[in-house]
Image (cartoon, rainbow, N blue to C red):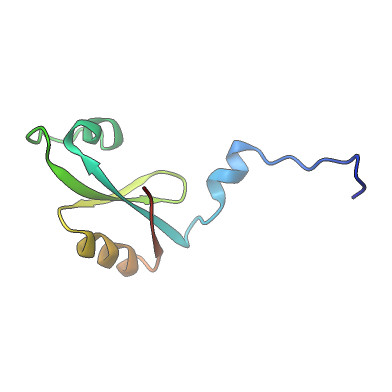
Length: 84
């Protein structure tokens, strides 16, 4: 590739990076739950939980403890990575 050639990466390409290998852990509050976990029953406002997402953003699990989120990712043979 010379200096004038550009390689492009699509959003679909990015969505597959880490697929089947990485799980993203993120602390989430009750206000975000309905957006990330459709169909979820209501939880008291201000409740903080840990969510685990696949590399493509698909929710995998929700728990009240970070250690449980890590264990859930490891059970699925995924490498847990924290998001802030």
